[in-house]
Amino acid sequence: MPIDRNCVVCGKGFSVKANRAETAKTCSNECRGKLQAQRYARERPTLKCDGCGNSFQVKAHRVGTVRYCSSACKTEANRVEIICACCGEPFWVFKSQKSRRSYCSNACRGQAMKRAELQCETCGKAYSKVRNAAEASRFCSKACLDKSKLNRVDKTCEHCGTGYSVNGYRADASRFCSEACKWKCFTGNEHWESPDGKTPEGYKRSGTNGLVHRDVMLAWMLEEAPDHRFIVEEDGEKRLASWVDVHHIDRDRSHNERGNLLALLREAHSRLHHSRKKPDPGECWPPDPPRY
Image (cartoon, rainbow, N blue to C red; front, side):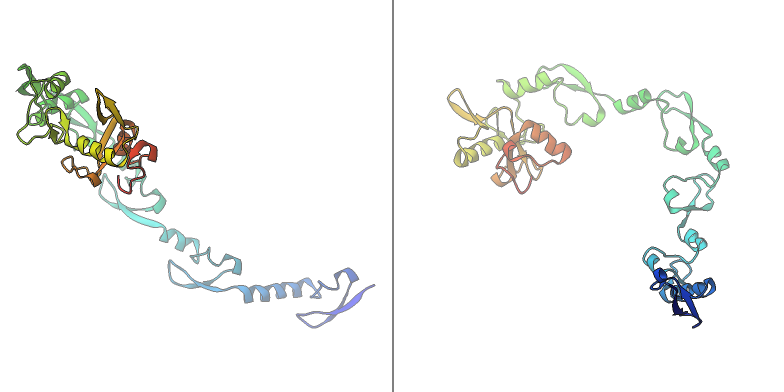
């Protein structure tokens, strides 16, 4: 049974089927279009373009996602100017391409990739390098680079008296021809004493074979945790186990106060220095240190 309704746009009467009585509002498609236009006009807020600064309207559901009034404004706002690494002329690229673009054109890129003729500072041979890397290049190969670093200096071993040579940058620190001579000197009767009472690594000595930081840590642990597994008994004497290191928290190897020391497993000590990883409570003493 048809039901009579009035058009909300033009006011004319019209009839619809009963199942459309609640949804029908207009008498024709023309009035329906006018109604939609009015509704959209009411729901379109006004925004300010981030690029040109002009005002523009968007649909309500796009507020918060639209920043530019047109594609041209969006493109202009997302471009940056950089300098061509070959010709030195400025050119525009998108911000997302800034890290990948160095040249303004394929011609400049090809010119930069051309090879420059250079002369090796070690062997004197001629070699070529791409132009963009030519300024930093000094040697024709890794072998020549290694030879340039050698600059050997003759030294005499302080333990066995054998002559040997070391790289120039190690001349002041090197005292022994091998690791064997180094440790024979430190642990044998012919123990070498440095003028400042330190090992070559910078640790303070205690007596002939001891180290101050290990003695301080042992005394501290005997007072606070005498039954800890880090303490072992050898020849009737308690000492720190050989697989336990003592770490200096402030990295100053001459600062041996208790609050600056941390006993920990050798593996945990290595991770701490190389990866800055805090040791687990079971790997160190005191457990769970606030500083490490």
